[in-house]
Length: 314
Image 1 (tube, one colour):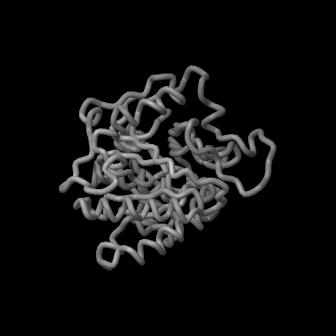
Image 2: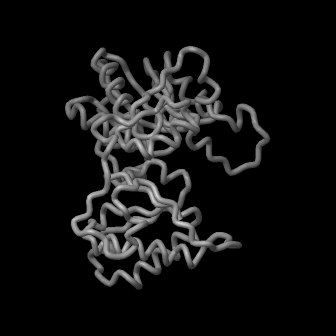
Image 3: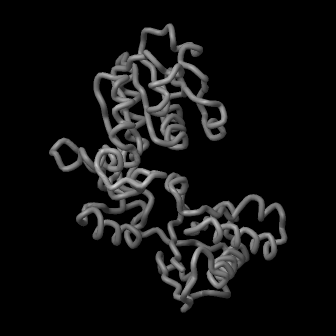
């Protein structure tokens, strides 16, 4: 199942896992990151609070988890259960005492575009049938070693697509039509469209901006702000000041701090922006609530974007 941004991939995954468990199947949900597993399990329990679902893993990875977590499957109440249930765990856990020798009817892989073939095989050995959710047009596997290619580097999802048994979700509930148009044209052969309820959505300011009006024009969902600078490496003072200027202007317009997010390409840039925010946003309560600043590594992929869907590229 290919799920471009905002197409409801996690909801579909949760609905499928719920249906399988209600049919008395033992379901394992795997992903490369704990955050992806937690998101899937949270979506599942949001649909059905009575479903038998747990996560197996170290408790350090449960800060955003809404289901019970156990260090080992054998310590959980599901160990002696014969009916259907859902377990979330990494592929690594299936090869350790946490989940070793536990068999599943179906293994569902989320964010499979980040899972290499060896990792996928780890999880597949625990089940009898497999379902992969991902998007080969998004972030590939994150590796710390230099490999030239092949199964040790390529994603299992990328190896499986275009063989006449994959399905793509084509409607995005997150991006309006202006933001959908570019990725749809460049990555999804024009198939990705915005649902009518969000297609024409625009920013709504409690108070109109009196500064940076061209950049913050509510009728322009995407803006490229050319600062005309060159020869920067891992941080840029000029860009950081521009970002903070945007944030303070948005706050003055009445936009809640919790609805402002910044994605920076490098950690050094993220640190610089955070330091400037401490200097120019004196209200501690507002500053601590947000704006949120994330470096554009694999962790940012699961973060929610502003619900009114405006993008400014600096």
